[in-house]
Length: 398
Image (cartoon, rainbow, N blue to C red; front, side, top):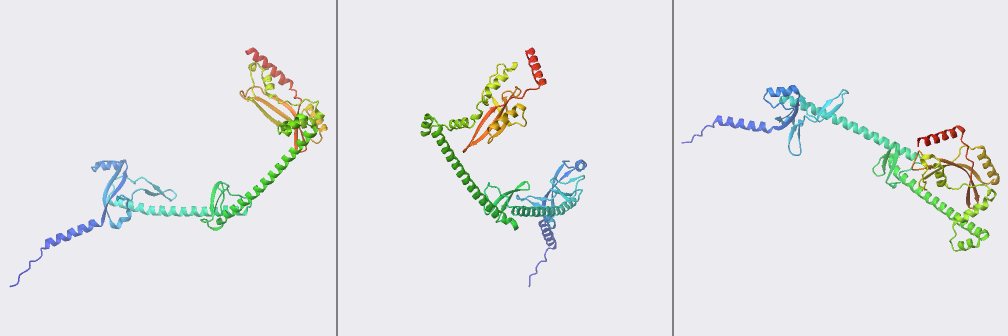
């Protein structure tokens, strides 16, 4: 007699199918966090619906796997709906970015949030495309500008790269278009590759030329020094005193003493004319003490400020002196000078102006100078009267 197998329980099979379908549905969704903002109307609606009424809301929802492109998962494994940063169109139809979450006037449903995330996702792609295109244009513009600067440098042989840092066959720095530009023969493209080697070649040529020029200057200076030494030795031997000859032989004779003696001989024809003496400290102190408020002033060499400049015009007396000196020394350079003496501690203190005629005469390898005192221009009567009135007024005040 055969055993009869029991029929399967259809109710248990149906329950198992439902559990499997539920697990499969749960496996095809992802729980994410959605963050958004509520306006005042939305906060009121939240309170009426039993919510907390806060401005910033964060809820969780299950997103199907076919919408995973709307979900972002950070490095900590936290999944959030792509609601922020938020991308919108401005008045020029350009996509702009806003880091704040979207704002709603009513409590959004799951579909509202997914729709907002989908719209944001599309605008984000457009934003990235626009940024990439703008970046590409900037790079193309920089490349074109780089090539233009390279062409300008190579076409102008007078242009030079920075000496610090020193140019090398590979790299150099140029100043162009109000900026410092780096050129690298290894990484640059096009004509820009030629800039660094050419800059290095020009730098080496300049260094060589500068070295030769310095050597020539040094040779001339050494020759001039030897010539001056021979001239001094000849003068001491022929015109110097016994004491000067002994000191010169011992190397103890000051050059200033010899030059002063040479100048005395070179300008002997004008020995009867008064010389300009550099006694500005005493002159300025005497000038200041003429004023009541500076009666007890003491001027020191540190307080004296002298400004010397060539005069633009000359009085009749000054011009006569210049002509006389030119007649005595036709080979000399005669210049009228104005010396402005001022007291540094007090910028309002009266200043003093002195005049002199400087005569420059070359004798052998030396340029000898001698300055003669020039007549001081007479002050106009109105200026003198004003000065006297001010002086009397100050005394009355004191």
